[in-house]
Amino acid sequence: MLEFARPLQSILRIKQINTTDLVWRLHCRATVCLLLLASLLLSARQYFGNPIDCVIGGGTVPASTMNEFCWIMGTYISSDPNFVLDSTDLVKINAKIGHIPESERSYQKYYQWVVFILALQACIFSLPNFLWKAWEGGRLQSLCDGLTTPLVSDQWEQSRKKKLVAHLVAEFPRLHRTYLLRYCFCTLLNFCNVLVNIFLVNVIFSGFWANYHPAVTALLSFDFPSWNRYNSQMFPKIAKCDFHFIGPSGSKQNRDGLCLLSLNVVNEKIFAFLWVWFLVLLIISALNLLYWVVVLCSKSFRLWLLAAPLYPIQSAVVSQALHGQGIGKWFLLHQLCRNLNPIISKELLQSLSKASKNNRRKTYQMRKGGEPDFYTDPEVFTEEHV
Image (cartoon, rainbow, N blue to C red; front, side, top):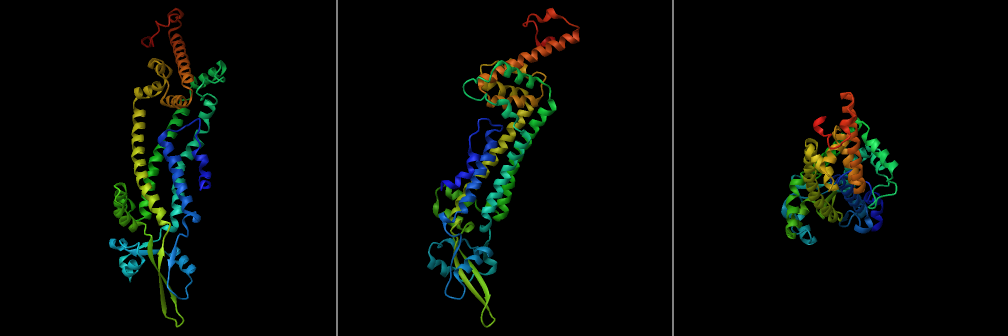
């Protein structure tokens, strides 16, 4: 069984440097792993047996042919909810089935596509992460290399600090703004992915979110008789199949079978979990979008996000480090401070604050024609003079 999880190890591997947040990882790692694992489980016949096994009477139609025909063409049950009440008793269910008119039939043709549907959903959820990796280009990895350990790394020497500060002081407003906009676009795409997948499942299962609600509610309330009744309407374990062919005399013959759909035992649990998971993910994603709206609109909130993890750093130092810089530079610093050692992050912001103050002094001196005595006392130089 562990062999099934082996292909997912690269996705589940904990990374030292994360360029995304927790909500993003719920989409592109946790959800993708769940969907791929479900797809692999449904394709494992050694654990759940044949996906379909039909019981037929005597005749010229082999059982293997009947199984393949019903798997390809689909099975059906009665649309009457009472049909599934005795579905565990073959004697009763055979007596109850009889002839089901075409207008009362509920066809089940989805099950041969479930594995591919789950794999397609995993690909859809992976798309934002693929785009972000291509756009991000390992930038954060190169900036944080060797500086994420709990103890201050030996690489954090004076020359490394100067290079990092020089890179962050350099003016690339358009580059940093694009970096932030691409991240926000992928975050929005994560939210849209949940909506797309909810719509996809709803179309394939003919109103899945409304029709499966009673089954999930019964399961969460531990009402297992109701769970079995409602669930068997969406994922029946026993269904009927008709095989039409021409007899020896040229007349139309019909061979009906009672088919056991063993994979629906797994499907019902997978989609009950996905029903809850997608709704929770939709709520979390909506709240995350609201969070980013606040971040983009509130400068004070952005300063707090940068300063709070590095307490007791003064907020004035953080404000000074970001003075005159756009929101793109804040996002890059936020990404760095989330991954760097806190001591290194604090020293980096302090160095940026000093560099920003020196640049402002030089700019002021150039504008005023030079007043060197004014800058000898750092306490005299305040923002009021700029």
